[in-house]
Image (cartoon, rainbow, N blue to C red; front, side, top):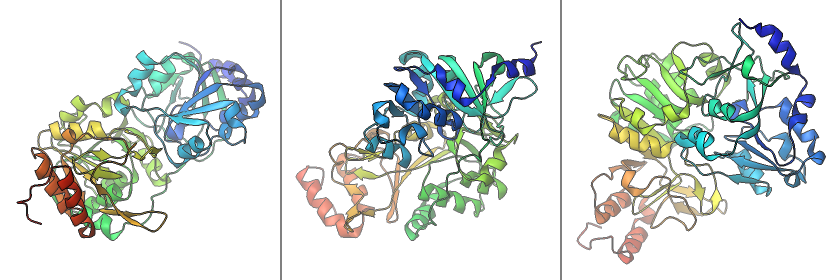
Length: 448
């Protein structure tokens, strides 16, 4: 048996020494979300003037990378985000970052088949266990596939990273690591709970929660409405719920602590709450730490439409930016301004509908107030030029605003238009009818 502690000491080095392996022109991978490196990022940024054309990948970025802070950072580093947060948008706004479009379920395969080998991968992990393993903690995601394609792997140990039990692809052994760095052991970055629920959030939740049966399997997106729905589920009479989700959020902890999650009705991974990655508050990080009820899994498992469809009564709840009268859902951009990404929304919308008894809900407020103070309808005649159709019209099931819930499955173009206008804000309905008439998707015989 290898002497793991001896190997550890042999590979232990400082962040400054470790990042010397990075060369101009390299592809460097920071992996994902809470696992982005901190000490290594800082050390790499300090080498800025020695390097050019270093291309760095990450995603769901929770703090500004040090390599992006300098005024001339873009002369040396280029950021590539698989899914954008406000931080990623700021990096892109500096002119040194770009979005990489994807369905999140396909990301591991990208690394296996479509991308050149990673020159250097660096990520935060848990401390090594007695068997020589470092756990990826909160993000299983696609990390194993990144590391399998990496020429050099540097792990940054953080004793505050919670060890999360996993399906597969959740750990790396010291034998497969190139270098080990012991960072400053910061608290794991937290994602705030957001603003308190609005009246609109509650109105939408009031429509969705009664549609959830006992024994349902839940997937919640991030945002005010999914969080509000989660809080209402925790307060409801629902029982024997289970979880299979892309992102694990605080709402699941509230539901579990209320005794609503047992997993006993789940067709796959019975009794386990399964997720690809987690981001939230310390309350959630403490809950998932070594908890046998939760299980990290690669995203090509959690987000696989075929896997989702095998779980009966699957309920998927996600957000949208706007929806057009054809039923196309935009959940990732405002025109050409990129906001987030496709993520797993399309996969879960399709998988939930294919599930026996499953339901997919896309939720949004009927209006939004712009920075100029102008109130605009989120239900629009056609998507703004440049906006991305995250969910094609053929894949959308339930759409919900504070004015009602509709099911688009099986509806013709005029029926869709009528249904969509019925849940738009009343102030915009006549205008939407006029636009629908111009597009020949409105029947004059319809009630007005």
